[in-house]
Image (tube, rainbow, N blue to C red):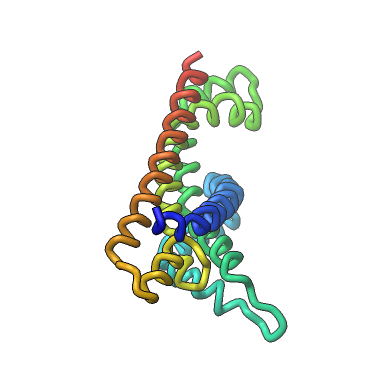
Length: 212
């Protein structure tokens, strides 16, 4: 209980980094996904470069670049701000692919039928493609959300005072390392299971809606 109490204040920090990065990932990933499916070469090319860049560079290196690389003489990002931006951009690259592949999985016959009935592209996307792709997005996106949560532990290496940072701080001052990090692992496991349950509920709900 004393160990958990010592780590407790790091939980909202870890969740804050995760939520902020996930929000950025969803917004930027949606834009990149649309660009990947664009019929125009320039936005599609830019999106491909973005996805390749942030999927190809290790997340820890991205964090170091954001924390140390974009500092100026008068301004430098906070550790938490750099972590949210860095992990958010990495998340956007992965989620862009998730969104694009999920939309592409919708049978083309349904899209063609909608167009034949005079349904516009926007309405086809809103009422046919997105609802049918949501179960797949929930499954793949939920898996990545768990992966992103675990990646937030890297933020401790640039000074974010999260669970991992606090555990290492306690170990440096004589605490038992195995016990501290076993508790950290259990905390992340519980949070990951919570995300998995939410993703399954969203996926099941969207499957019911799509089947109607």
